[in-house]
Image (cartoon, rainbow, N blue to C red; front, side):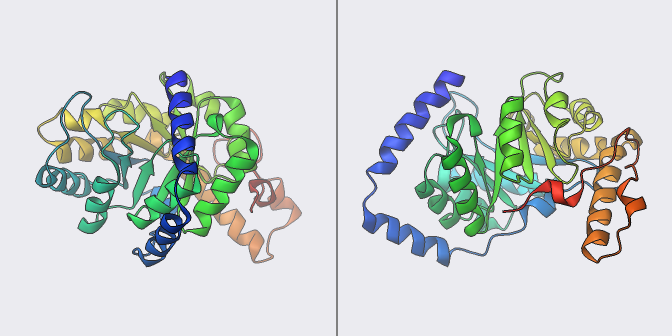
Length: 305
């Protein structure tokens, strides 16, 4: 898969360089005129009421023709009624991706907030996503130089979108933290991989698991390993009741054993607010978060840009 993404990134870069200035200007105007972005990060943050959220993915099965607009509309509505915390739409360069038309359709229905997953290497792609109604976009550190990653993160934020960094290694995690990422997606093929990746993240960062989540048991496992959200795609397409499956997955995350990460997040959020009001003390600075063997990350460690 690594070689595939590298090859796609090269093609996308070449195409972006060919976009004329007039088209770029038109995209900027379209992005400014698009419906205001919605708060993606807040929709995903774990809480005692919803320890782990589920992001439903609008896509097609590999090799299958793209669904008709009416089918897409029904599927998007099913994800929303099933209790999806957010909805993901993928670009055509990703297998099963339906692209910007599906993103526009979902935004027109009012479901969301919406994440657009693409092999993003250019600001032109960010403008297209925002113009189509995206509230968040994915970025892959591994295919981007430091200066490219930082520029795309800042550009996404300037457009009002949440940059979600898709990580595969500890090196990716370090670069995500350097960008003060608030949403990190572990692109993991194994349930034993992502807990190690998550360990280095501050508790205010929403940890998202992608791949291998097909049933309520998988959601529960992700929650126990520190995930605050999961992305579910193929399993929802293969069932006759996507709304029911998604609802059962969302319910699984409310098991008492899944509450620890939500309590950690709430603890750090409360402590951060207290510090901002000038009420933090040296004693509080040495306090420990629930269930932890070490102090939580201090607000100054989270990093802002």
